[in-house]
Length: 424
Image 1 (cartoon, rainbow, N blue to C red):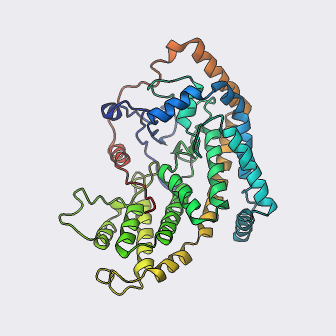
Image 2 (spheres, one colour):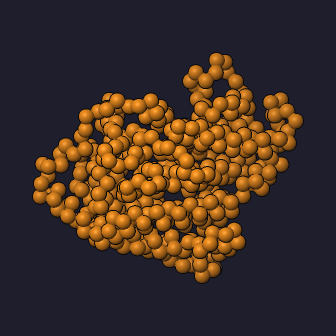
């Protein structure tokens, strides 16, 4: 797929909302500057009150400032363990094999880099695999209230460094894990928040560089589809589901068909519900920050539906009448799924996408003056805020603008995202 999609500006949300009324009023225009390209921005998920407030009380902003360069360097070293020269299949296969062998020098190097990164991560979070950008920014800027975070894309924002660290953590887990259960947990977590741990938003190629933004729209979608497919394949193989359960898992993971809404008039079984959900691309479930319906064309939504139909066909094609013969075994179908979507295929997609994203992040940091410039600008920003706190009370408060039709539909879908699949 190529970058032939025109990105419309998506609605931007405040980082925290005190209640549902504030949430509905917190939508802001995603235009960062009248002269800049249109940006598709992620909305920041509300921070958990108890956990995040505890973090904000305990995280040391001075330590975070002094460790930002180290976080950047260690994340790059870890990602360097999974960097390819050519990206050819044989090179990818060799790298994956070595990374999964605990006795190999490649794996030992990767584990050592991961341990160093984990130690530095403790400066930026109290728990969890991924760093939370909003929490880090609030701690650095000493913002304890529900005021919106600054969205201006200036050199002081550490977004790129945070995304790089999160990318390094995910790549290490996804490539080195051999056990299905451990990998499943990592995929569920990544799919639930995708792509916010690794990117702040999307913009067209050639646009003015913005901290944390990516132009890899089609590449990110391709990987996201492989991520969700592998998640579903592992779920199906570990759960040993009945046909009805399998149909529910496929629909719940890949499609956004709300059986409690007005999608149908009478009660239907799991298989019929799945088939109905496959009937229109409007039911394609995207990701919280990568909505297939938001890009002026249905090609991304159609790809999701096509992949879902392929999974359904592979799983049930050995059964003469799955609507009637509900007790038939799914063993042969599960084998076909594993053969069509092997774990190595997902890992190859991850290596290719992560290398592209790393290059993009490093290029963004370079264009912003390098990590030293970012850290210096961050220190200046914090100093100015401490010296002039009243000047930042109402930052980023803008007059509300009417949402375009595509913004309105995207906002509605974001507020009604399908539940994330969990193992049963």
